[in-house]
Length: 270
Ligand SMILES: CC(C)(COP(=O)(O)OP(=O)(O)OC[C@H]1O[C@@H](n2cnc3c(N)ncnc32)[C@H](O)[C@@H]1OP(=O)(O)O)[C@@H](O)C(=O)NCCC(=O)NCCS
Image (cartoon, rainbow, N blue to C red; front, side, top):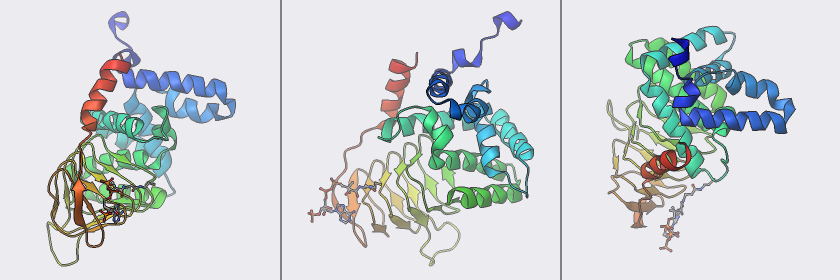
């Protein structure tokens, strides 16, 4: 039976490529050998590596690395979709972040990616009704990375949060697929609404650094929000808005990052 089993690296081209990058990195910088081995080369799958990285980052005197790892392993085993989303996030960061030259970089070094993966486990806990544990994940992600995402918020796949200081995503916010945001973005409430009070961000939206998107408003697919804007009203699809309060300043061509990612998987990972 062992002979017929495929190694996970043979059926996950993204993970396979990450392992190749890691081997080269250890050769180039032996001082990083311990980190790269324990975080990547020691693992047979992306899921295992993510669970290890999340637990290492979030562990504290309040909850051990072992317990956090068991919870993350449980989440990934119960819902493989979480790992597929992580894979899409990885490729999105690699594709869109000019400073990302290898797929292993977000796993090892990018707190935006790490925080989103920890949020995904917290969101899974939330949906299981384990709300206090989910709040614990939110608190530790916020303490560790400076990124405060409520575990009830719904976030799609192919997400890039670049630089990632000071991100706030409220409880009833919804973020579509292939969204990119820079640091200091708030998806918050106005303070004037109860219950469903946070923004709904469409697919393929770019949210510039420092933008505040407030209230239960819709940001249309493939729109762009300029850095520093305060958005208080719906934005139609494929527009660029800027200013305080934000106004439409132009069209926004959609680069369809999801399609680019598909191309990447077909062209470069087989
Ligand atoms: C909005 C953005 C995407 C540019 O889009 P664009 O379609 O090329 O827009 P333009 O540069 O042609 O500007 C259109 C108008 O909006 C204004 N504008 C652009 N960005 C603005 C901003 N952040 N705040 C206020 N006005 C802005 C321009 O001055 C211009 O006004 P005008 O027509 O009166 O001259 C870009 O300005 C932006 O904010 N990107 C986010 C980048 C970011 O967050 N970087 C951080 C990296 S760490």
